Length: 299
Image 1 (cartoon, rainbow, N blue to C red):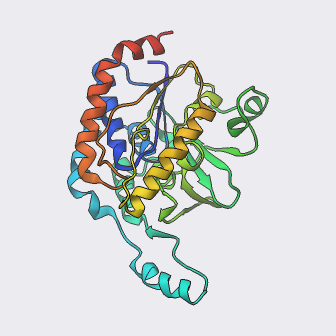
Image 2: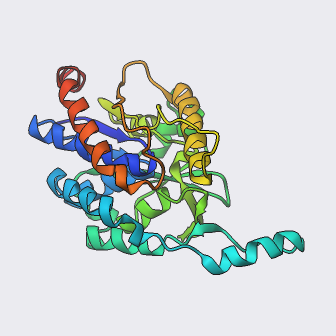
Image 3: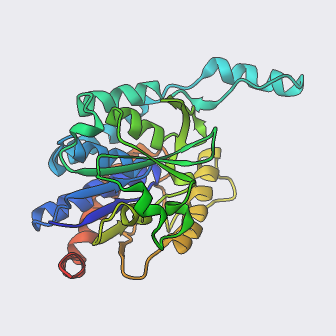
């Protein structure tokens, strides 16, 4: 099927994307190009590495029970954080979680597949803290000069985006999923990378810049709420949701169909227990949207 599917970030809510892909596969509507940010990058990267929607569903089921095993807190950094703050010394803590265990899990899941070896077209953004630029990893045939001369917004056609075509999918997925302050930034190829959602939480415009004509987006962050007694994870999730809504309005294109499944209210950034319900919600919602999806990809 000749179209691109853009998957938004949203932490554990990203399990909804696995449900979306399962429904699309059943209807013979799987995309030939997939883009993903943060949680969306994990689903997109796994699909590009050759995992089927069925296998993705099995991994969602596994993570819903054992996901916490892959969280590796930086205990030493946290212990030093308060004294360093109080004594006005340089703070060493770069993130509450190291991210190494999750990265190892992703590498095992994708068998160390490199982006050049991807089974489908793939596009994953991350953000470089050194330059402030969006680094887009892709195996697509990119004509950067043509992009710069296009009428697309400067956020995707200007100097604030650079295109990379090398790297292991698992490392790229982890970089795109490294929520600032929660996960340590990832050092890759001279970049210091954090979550792609900082600039492109729903990467539809990046797909358009890459020359993809028919695009469908899947937004999973539009209904997150903030309770008065919310934790730091709730603060980060809600902040990204608000920023994502703002960026989507800036980056949106009128002719792009955006799917917005209704997900559990308790599905926070690292709420692995809500993944199965999120996946099922994505599946059921997509089945109802099949007529609109067919119309969008066959136009």
